[in-house]
Image (cartoon, rainbow, N blue to C red; front, side, top):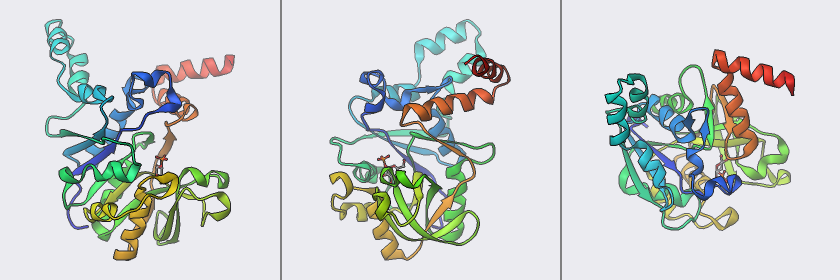
Length: 290
Ligand code: G1P
């Protein structure tokens, strides 16, 4: 892919049933890790990768995400009046001034591939990124998507983030069979969505970051329902691989937290707390007490 990455798609139309009853009214992407909602970590990573157009694929229950990135007139006026500049900067900083947010709806839930396809009219025929906000990836240096965008540009290929997972968990992920190129990247030979451990070609799992060419949309249009009766992004990427011969799997630098479940959210929260001097002391003391 020769062009730099400008657009990033966030599929955020899921129901978040693992966090009921909170998700009756709070979109799961709005659940906080310390003081920032999950979606903010994802947006920061996209902006760090150079994106200036963020495409949120939502459903009609997810107004909070649009509200969160919108201007909060009353609140901002109050903070300004009281001279609370630091808080004002936080409120205004959810979306940098040069970045725009576009919302498209996924009218019916037909899977991740279908959600991504809903972004086609906005993305068009150019390379773009996908971030699944449930997968929070923390890195001290460049974010995972930024690392992948650089590789996609230099290698002229789609890039999928991967990580080894326990063998008995292959049925939760897209799984790749890949031939190593160097320590971090590998050429994908084959990929399959949620295979049973006995059928999995490896334990190298796709995690929620992708850099793909615009061509994927046409392939998604031709993709039949797959695992779970849903239109799977993994199946369209497998078709892209057949067609273009080269899609890379990339072991990103950073730590992933699967915040789509409670254990992951607890871990992410503790990890982020440990990055803060005062909160780190609180975590240590409390852990000692426990
Ligand atoms: C999706 C993808 C899967 C990928 C996973 C990463 O699955 O379909 O290939 O491994 O995200 O989080 P989901 O978690 O939406 O079932």
